[in-house]
Length: 96
Image (tube, rainbow, N blue to C red; front, side):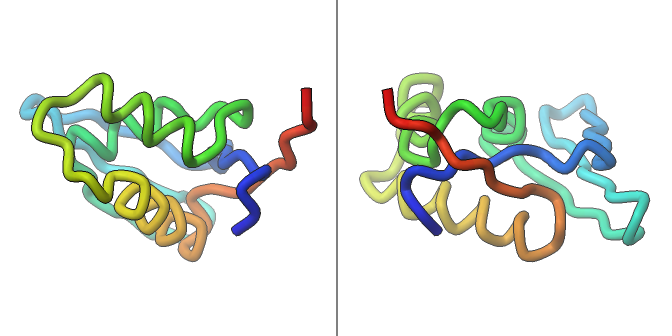
């Protein structure tokens, strides 16, 4: 994954939030579904095609308490898994 790439959600994917702050992502094109925790929900909502994974990890670190020191690795792994299952894609971020 290129650090200049910004993850974007697959527009076909539906986020269904549950009452306990967890959610389900469902891809109707593949019938794949995945449950995500509150941090995963926050990450999903930050996928706007403008933020890099590093920037998303920084936002997560600001939003949540007790974030592990390897938050960037954890977020990167999560987004990579979502990409492998067709939930997200990537756009190149142009330098300023």
